[in-house]
Length: 83
Image (cartoon, rainbow, N blue to C red):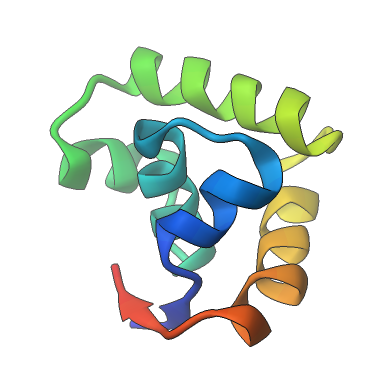
């Protein structure tokens, strides 16, 4: 398990919904999209839709770049949580 940014920081910086932020936290903790969907109790299709919205809101085009962005800009500004 990895410590990552709390959703409120991501909500503010990137105007994410709480659902998108929860998914982002799980992905940044190293979970696959499918594992994150299972943990959050959503379908894989819903997780993909939220991921696409995260790409749009963060101006990224890949899951790796999204995670890198979240870890570099959010971790230093917030208390860690475990996903």
